[in-house]
Length: 356
Image (cartoon, rainbow, N blue to C red):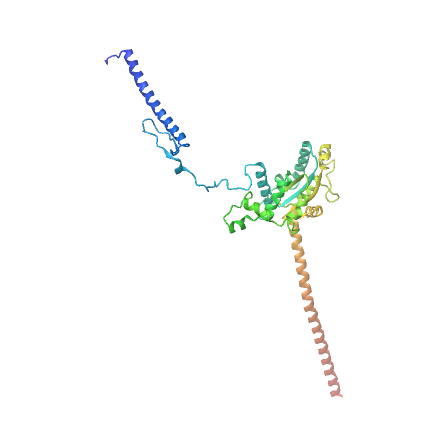
């Protein structure tokens, strides 16, 4: 049986062990504190600044690392934040980037001027717009078995900030990032100084450019309906709701759509004016929008009309070319027949004379 240890002696031995551990720990913390103080004082003295690193207790003194060895180059640029002519974190910069992306990816945009619409009126207009687009027949499966994408959920109505949208129009019209990259190694994103200098030198008054044609429409409060693809059927549905023009684009009847005639919606739609559109990089007025929306059968119907026109033109050209050769052949055949008849008649006369 092992000897029993006196309780007081055991408590004293445990206390000494705990005191030694606490003392060693406090000494290591004090050494770390002194090292940090030396590093801080070094910022205003000749001693080089350093960073303290965590080391286990009893591992020796903390090494001092000079700041110069960990310093980034003066010309270092983070790859996630290239230099910009505008502050990229501001709301205007983000809105400009969204507008340039919208202009590059949206082939069809309708522009409306609006005047003091209230929030309930905007909600009613968007509600009727979604209801009208939902009534457009879904795309038909093609002969190759692939079903086209339904663009109805992606058609949106949004209010534009005209001044920022004007800058986005300049960038998409006059700034070619690919060409600038080939010329130099400068940054060529939409917020770069290269884009800013390019649009400053752009010929804004040239009437042949899309910007010169569409900039007069960006006056006052403007809203836009954006389409991810050119679809005459969806365009006709939007015109019938937001800018009806009978008899081609008549508004729905009260029996078919009673909510269309609610006072809130009628008050809001009367404050919308269709001023123009941008379709496949070209500017169209109200008549041009009605023409695109009135294409029967959509783009497939337009392609069928083009094929029929080319076929009829080719058939007419073939008939015209064949008509000349046929006329010449008929004239030669007629002359040959006439000569044969004359030759046969002269032979008969000679035979009659010889018999007489």
